[in-house]
Length: 108
Image 1 (cartoon, rainbow, N blue to C red):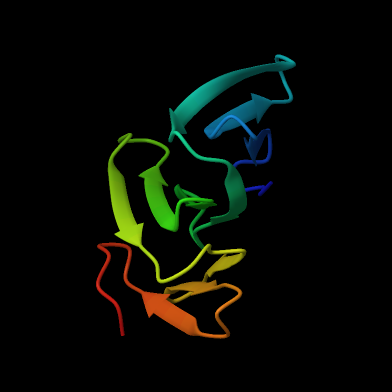
Image 2: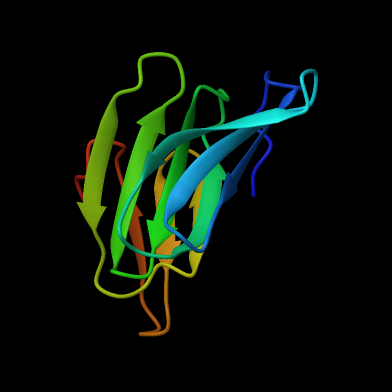
């Protein structure tokens, strides 16, 4: 789960069914943002709090802008068990390698 900066009432969670959901504390309700056909293993939010990135068991990484609903997809070399978003998206898995990505999917 991640709590995006500037969105004090929204908690973003990933589920075993492959869905990424927003839980709204003011209304005590949740809604689905997007999903894959694979287990969510990691999730992080962007520094500005307007986007989230989720890692899935099928080696994919999906970026999602919370306002525009735009999605982007990155294919990582292994399951992205560790995921963070700072200046770049950082992903690491059990292959012992760390990769840095632009939100557009370009790898460094």
